[in-house]
Length: 571
Image 1: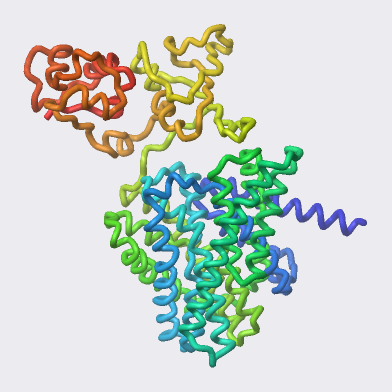
Image 2: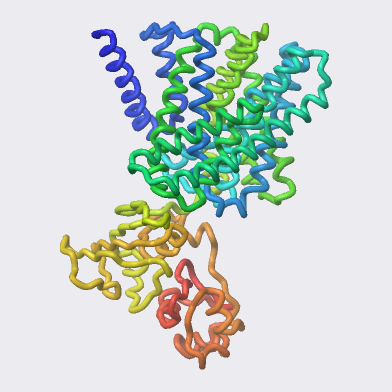
């Protein structure tokens, strides 16, 4: 009985210590994965913990289940709305990019390590996928916001490149074990089976699971458990039938996360927590498995392999895959640098051990060392790289409150709380009238800690608290009115986006249509220059920058106009 209590106590202590240490180290810019791996190594056979864990099949089982949970959560959190700007380049990186990265890395391994062609390509395939999710947690912990296309491309790639690396690893192991097999036929057949069944079962399974959750009445606490069990069921069935369970579970999450779902926010919050717990447990386990003294003999080989992977293979693959999409060179450099290696390569390094390959242990320690180098070098420099390359955007100010509401009938809404400041747009401009997004409804207005009897939205002052219900897709429009943002000059909207330039010959009616403004019918045929001359100044203004405050006085009369971000210049 005492032994049971001790295991529970020390297990909880390790998890809690990992979480608390991550809070501290994230402020220093240390990647969380590195923290968990380090704690696991301290618990391992050569650390103070002295734990010996050599059950590779059990480690593979736990790692695969943890990856399935993490990918399902990633699918739930990926918005299809972002696909318009990032889907094609991300899919290129997740398929062709992984193949190129694996091939170039394998080519170096063949030349330097003296391995056979298939073993060299296998080593390249194992380290071929990235862990961009770790990059996002690192960027957000440092208060960085990336440009939309860059961030979306990395986000989609992170959830979709793992199946390709897993597919290549499995195929190459089969070719090593069956040297008489025809290479081309086996690859084509395996690819069609893995990806075809994975996509089919993922999409179909996601729709079926969504229907079960929406139609069967359950206790609120059962909805997240049903989603988790259903996701693992999809993963297991797909794998048993020869498909890619990892692709299936990600697509199932993608389908469910982008459709109306009963208790959706309850499900998403639960899976955020269980995915974090899976990540902690997986990296602690991987840290316990490794023997640090066995890393030193492979340090040179792993260091050179990591250098080729980081400085050559990944950048070349990114340049090739993004060439058709005309990404600026700065964005290509950053995406090439953000090739952070994490959980998947170490889990894939267990596959050769399970298959009984002669060089399996060597592969495992080389891959583990490569991941450590990637976490240290790339993980610590990704935030400065974003700043140096000019990809940082003005961050959103923290809101007082953001609560997801599950409305009966599967309609998702959000309750947003704002604390107004002197530099909040609606306060700074002292607007007598403004247009809220269509779905927005003011719920409460507090002043001096007192709930006002009436909703005085036309009398907003610094220090007021405003609580508004809004649909998630219209939240950015609401933020433009009520978020107060104080950023350094280098991140001011004028510095990042430049001046807002309109042609003085443009008809006021056309400008109003373009920016959602409402203007009097009699003014719609006038040019913008004529309108501003009549309202602002008597002298000519063509070619001169107009004072922004004076322009806003006029814009105030154009209900809903958003010419408030930066200055206005007449051409």
